[in-house]
Image (tube, rainbow, N blue to C red; front, side, top):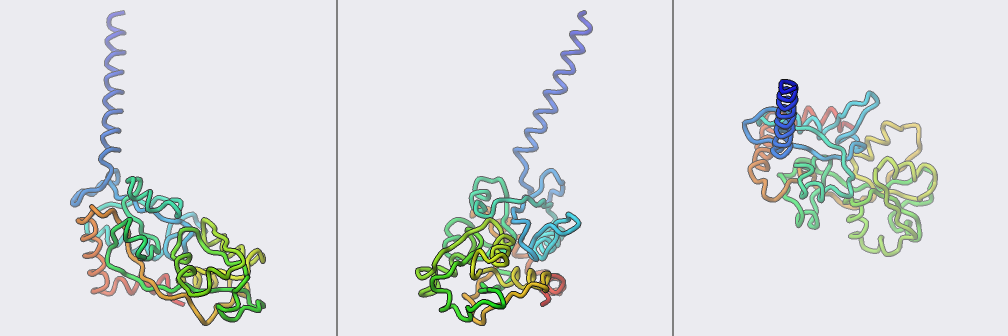
Length: 264
């Protein structure tokens, strides 16, 4: 009996040791410079429907412009990354509570966001497009008065609508969705009259759905720049990202990745 008790005690000690080890790995889960283990990877938060920046394709693979940029820079600067789908409306909260370490997914710089996060150097210029259906009577932004407009919640599309003089206050209804896929579906089914989306996403979606008669208004709601969002205290990581962006732009890698995903 004494022998069995000793065996049981040893087994319990082993199990306890493994549990403590696992806890330590979780507590130290943020990747440190110079380390290169998948258990200590920086976590990148993204909306995995935001094509062509970062999205799950028809084969179930996570792909896109930002995915390729992140992988290339991580490889060059010797740190590991993993990607985590998040509620886009909660992205800054996810970052600052340390559930993720970066927001890297068509994340546009805005004054409001600057108060919450630190940004890398900008790496891509985009616009906010206004899109309707081909047979719509809307031909200019002024025609949206009293109409239903849809966009992604907590996106810079909302900022663009609010900042465009005379647009927001004269809408018939503003409809917000978790993803831009739902925004486009809303337009296709006639539940709204017009939508506002990032140009990169909008052009890609319309190219992939060329059988649907969308129409882009000549007027847009202004330009903006995309960057990587980080916690304000993560200055070393921000510098690594900036160095990586500079390197891939200098040697032509950035242009190759851009041509792969954003050729129109």
